[in-house]
Length: 492
Image (tube, rainbow, N blue to C red; front, side):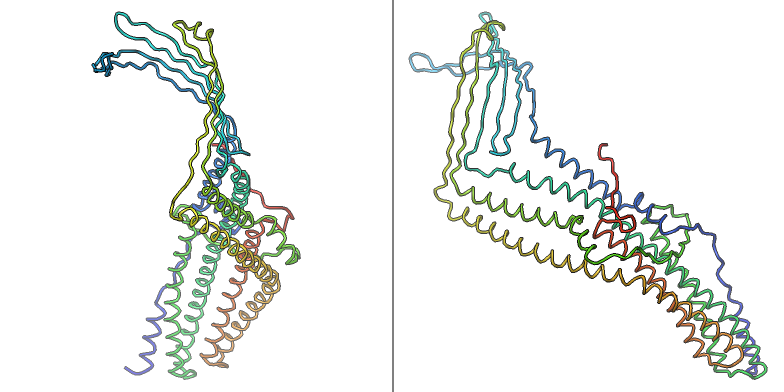
């Protein structure tokens, strides 16, 4: 077989490779994707759950400072047993002790946040019936008793909770907004992954069509001797590579589409096509404005304060443990006993209890001192770490602000570069068709065109990525000029 026959077979076999058919897909804009992400993504659901827990934690903190009311009782209690009894001569014998008792108690408890103590108001009623032939019954009443339990030198947790819990709830509200903005950032990244993959697939298919036309034209030119065998082989290799690139791009597109659908909670059978958005632009803002909004709104600053307060509270706690443990208990009220219910409340006497409990550490081999020194060291470390993290965060805000402010000009540059590269490639195609440039020059123009397209898509991504990072850092909508607010129903 001569060379011309071989080239003819190669041309026919290569051109016979089918092009991938276009599939019907549903359009999905970036804004629509972000709405879906906030509504259906797992990250958004976790965020709502965390917000719910933070809300009820704060509610419980406030509830703990309100009076607590409880009712307790034993209705009834039957006791039939033998108990030892010492007789007058000093000997013991077992006697039956059979009785039926009922008890009902009512208690109101109130903590005293500024002292760390507790005060109780109690009222209870008890009846006991002795069983047997000579059995009788009587009532024991405590109409009211006021009891104060007050540690004198102990650590007061209520004082520190008052400092921490409102800050923690405020931070959790900001974190709820920040986490939703972070969902937007993740949606933007996944969306542009798919968009880039779609652009690569479109370029691969266009390159495949161009390579097929060029190779077909070259096969005809080879018959009349206007193209070398080396150039023809190079075009054939280019077409084979173009076919392979299409298959690779199709697989990557399906992978990126499934990743986005999974993140947005979409049905796996839905096929989506992303829409290229414009670059994200907002009115001119200053770096100082961005820094100020971040300082006002970002929860990281409240979390810094919480860490410092908790570290300081731990120092105080360990210091107080080194002091004598003194508890004052006072109880004042009335009590009465009588066979009849009315008599038990009529024949009343005073009921008074005063008690001071003391526990003094004598020898603990330096354990409490060691715990106190550790707490102080932890506090110093927390101060240093929060100062360093605050500086790092402020620097992160500055870099983010500068990067975002460059995006408007960069988007224009890359858009123009993409347009110029596409025009240059079209010119190169026409020049190659008349034999004015080599295959190498044509391939180089194609690479420039594809790279310029990818760079433009990536620049679009950066404009949106930096914008939503800016919202995430500042919790501020620079387009509307207001703080970002997301309503959430906590009561469920």
